[in-house]
Image (tube, rainbow, N blue to C red; front, side):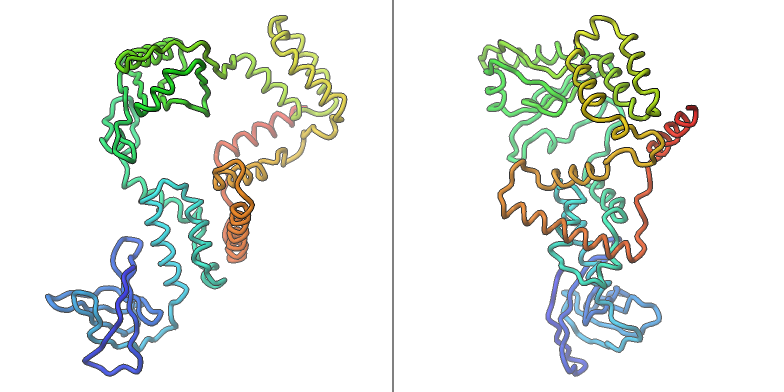
Length: 388
C-alpha cells in the first residue's frame, strides 16, 4: 500500500489529507483519503481523476500521474468507510502473504488478525477465513503450475531446485507407461543416507523424499536399484544392515476396524459379536493379534464398563472437534516443545482467533457445512442402527 502526503494548490484546504493506495479484490488500484475510498475514473497524460466508490456521492480527487494530490472535493454524502478500508487493507496483506508464502492459509489469517488489532466493528464485517479461503486459494494456485491429473507432466525448473538453487530432483523416470518415480535429495543428504547402517521407511517420516506411484514390491525394488546406482556415481557402498518399515497387512487392518466398530452396536449384543469375530479368525491371525486381543478384553470388557464406551443411538460419538482443534494447534506451533514465551504467544493468538470467531458468529456467521461424505456415513450408521 503506497502513501503520499497531499498538497493542494488549486483549492485551499483546512487540513491537507494523507492519501494512500490499496488494491481492490480484482487488483485495481483504489485511493484512500480521510477514511473514504476513491476509484479511478479516467486518466490523461498529466492527471488522474478519482471519484468516490459510492455512485451517489459527488466527492472527487485529482492527482498527478505520480500519485500526488492536485485537487480535492471532499464533500461526501455518506458516512466514512473506516471499517471497510481496514477490511480491504487486511485482505490485501492476507492475499500477498498467501501468494508469496507456503504457510497454511488458516495460520496466515490468524497471524494477520493478531497483527491488525481490529476493532469490534471491523471484526464484525470481516469475512471469516472459511469465507475468504476459496478466493485466496485461487490466487495462490494462479502462481503455481496446474496440478497434474496424469503421470505425464513437465516439472518447471524452479521445482527441481532448492531455495538456494541447488539441484534437488535427482531421479525422474517412468517405471511403466503409467507409473513414474521421483526422488528428491541433495548430494550431502544422499551421502548420509547411503552411508547409514539402518534405513527407516514410513508414510509420515522420510529420510529421502520419494514420490512413488504405489507400494508394490517391484516399485521399491526399482527405487533401491536407483539408490545403488547413485551410490556408485558417488563412489559409495550402499549396503544397509537393516531396513525398518511400518508394514500393516490389509487383513489385520480390517480386524482392527471391526473391533473399533463394536462401540456402534447395542450393548446387549457386543460380547456375542466379539466372540463371533474371534471364532472367524484363523489361528495364525489370532497369534499375531494376541497382544491386541488381550488388551482389548482387559481394558474394554473388564476395566471400563461397556456402558461407558458404547455409542449406539448417540448423535455425537467422537471427540473429533477437540481432536481437530488440537491438530490445528499443533500444526501452527510446528515444534514439539516450544519454550514458555513462544507457547504463551501461541495461546494469545488462539485467544485472538476465538475473539474474532465469537464476534463473527454474533454477526450471523453460519456453521461450517458438513461434507457429503460425512453426511453419507452418518446416514449409513443410522440405517444400520435401526435394524436392531
